[in-house]
Amino acid sequence: MIHEVLQSLSRVFASPARSPRMAVVLGRLLGAAFLVCMVTGLYSHAIQEPQPWMVFPTRPIQLYQVSQGLHITAGIACFPLLLGKLYAVQGRLFETPPVRSFPHFLERASITVFVASSIVQLVIGLLNTYQWYQLFPFPFRQTHFALSFVVIGSLAIHIGVKLPVIARHWSRVPDGSRPDNSSEPPAPSTVSVGGVTGRVLRWIDASPRPVSPGASRRGFLAAIGAATAALVAFTAGQSFRALDGLNLFGARKQGVGPQSLPVNRTAAAARVEQTALAPDWRLTVSGPAGTRSFSRDELAAMPQTEVVLPIACVEGWSQSATWRGVRVRELAALVGGGPESSVVFQSLEQRSSYARTEMGPEFARDDLSLVALELNGETLDLDHGYPARVIAPARPGVLQTKWLSSLEVSET
Ligand SMILES: Nc1nc2c(c(=O)[nH]1)N[C@H]1C(S)=C(S)[C@@H](COP(=O)(O)O)O[C@H]1N2
Ligand SMILES: [Mo]
Image (cartoon, rainbow, N blue to C red; front, top):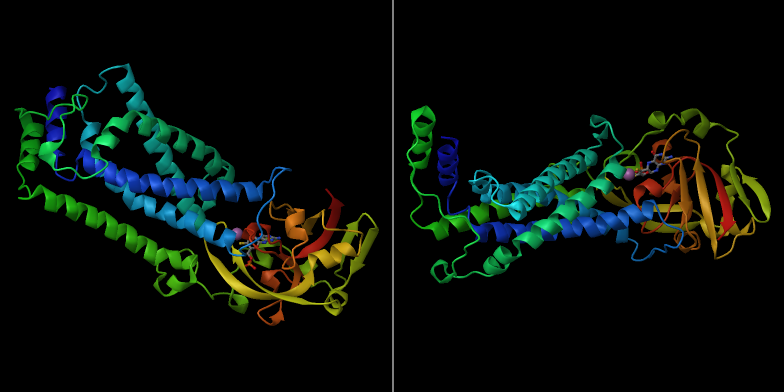
């Protein structure tokens, strides 16, 4: 009975869109999107948790912005692609017998791990772009990073196992001329199933079929393609300025917030309102040649540099702005720093993983790396890091520390 129901189900789900060719076409797109996510994700992880030997490019200044924009956009595109792919292979879920051999068991186990881990990966990634990480009881970044190896590992096994099918259906071949494949399960035969279930199944199964399977297949692909393109077009504006007008669902809008720039964490949320506005605020700068401290007026009296740099949040939104302030390199030089110095920045904010940032020599000596005092022609808004904040090229937003209290210069 169970056997018959399964067979009937697989027949119900056998539509032209559910072909190996469709699975391969969608799988390729999905594979490409996963690859983009993996490469950009590893870069983002490395720059946030650098190993001592790592050196990062500081140009183009939009490097992190583009990389993270691609990460989030490709991740969003995975939703319709993955749903389409699952639809295309759905019949296999009910294939009989469920396990035919040990290799077949491995294949099914790896695909189960892959589907489950990639759904979790995509969902927590999306939730994170909306800052809904309070919803899950584990640290986002570490979990997302660890899970990526499960996703990529099980994907590699899946691709390896499916290589024959992938090769056979890689390019479009007229169905008649496709060589028979004995490793694929035979097409389910018509079966009679008794009882209510059977009648329901037969009723669904009897629904009219499209006359031309080719057209339906193309229609299905077009629908998935349109869904993907629409989703990308309506969210990518959070990362790519040209698409801002279309940004309907993206987590952030461009130009919204004090001084036309979005705020990620406000001064109130960071509990720095009092310390940041205190009249006796000073920036402590220490290094090989000793320690000095500067009031905001003293910093403003030093040579000022103006730069145009983006804030590129790991959560996907990014926006360019004009910043003015003192070069990190020039401040470091006052306490004995040189071109090989790295700098540790400390915020007034307490107990936050964003309160302390390390900057390697390649960024610390860069002409565009500033302790910024002004944003878009005005004194830095309190929510953007008044009295002083870090801004540097090709770095993620999380490392652009706001409400600075000190700089520690050390030789590496
Ligand atoms: N001290 C401190 N600095 C911080 C943060 C923070 O929470 N605390 N958030 C960071 C993040 S995640 C981003 S994206 C940028 C955003 O800067 P903005 O709020 O001025 O746009 O600030 C960064 N600097
Ligand atoms: Mo961020």
